[in-house]
Length: 453
Image 1 (cartoon, rainbow, N blue to C red):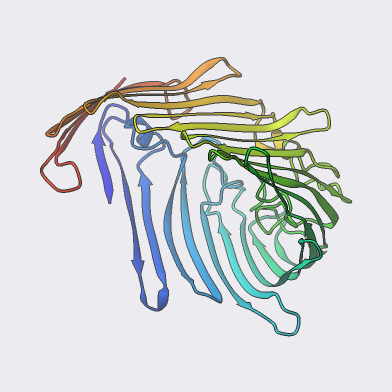
Image 2 (image 1 turned 30 degrees about the vertical axis):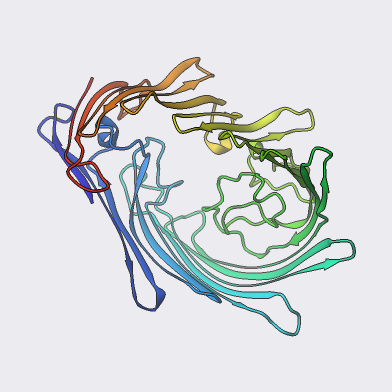
């Protein structure tokens, strides 16, 4: 439980504050209850006082239970959004969900059979900001999925799956979509993998796995409003999946094929590398995919993702989507190096302009953080973000620490250069004093002072 209350000149005559109250209870019969109340008095309060840079807060509860052959989870979440672009249409303020599934191992066909049922609801209360965007949606679904794996011949791995999903949508307070929509979605997939292992002359190990996957699905019935798949990303975790939509509202249709592979190398001195690459070919050109997702055409962009790890503590990972001319649509890279006294991290992201993803201009940004423990007493830290499109900084911060066995002093400074309707550029100066040695395993009394201009 953390909370604050303030009386300041930002909103004269009004009290401002926030409360974060979160907990978890272990109940009978393996049930777990998680709950949270996270609210702020106004959109800018958390940023003004440096408590959090979150663009929305979540309140609600979740009840779940996971056992060997069945799983149940449910949640009710209420969102408080702080961005001017947060509107009812794209961000329902109230979301509820309940899901149950059970696994079987049928002796007749082998493999694993999963039966599931789910209920979802998105509620948009009336607001004066979006008086016409108050659509409420409820979904009820029943699903059945079967999957199995075989190893044949010289180590060829064959994976097969088949499923059928039936769901019904009820839409209220939306003149363009009011009513009940039902549909049936059969699907099937076969994947072939052939892991090949070898040893290099220097003692390293290579594992190369070519992969090809064939899938098919069809939608029989109506088309509901797409609420849970408005942002689609192609990445190494879903490259060989049957569907690339993160939710259930939008669905793949027709036959498709994904081809590519993975290469892993482990060096004799402990360093390792992992590479994933591939692309997707499909019969249908689905308009639900944005241009920068790499999936908007019948032949997708090339996906290339890699990770490198070294015994020295250095790690590098990156991902990019390339068209046939090797022009990237989305790219991201991250580097980290950590030792006993030094911690450095830097990341870069590039995103093409895409109105379908509410991004009218391209994004190109560097982020870095560094920390150096000079000795047992002194330490320093630096951080920042830099916008390569506008050639201007977004954030910058610095901290100096001094400590001994009795006292800890930290002096910090940070500057936020961005502005919006509710937030203005600001500089924060902070002084933190901690008294150590009054308890076991933690610092004792901490006194903090800060000011913002």
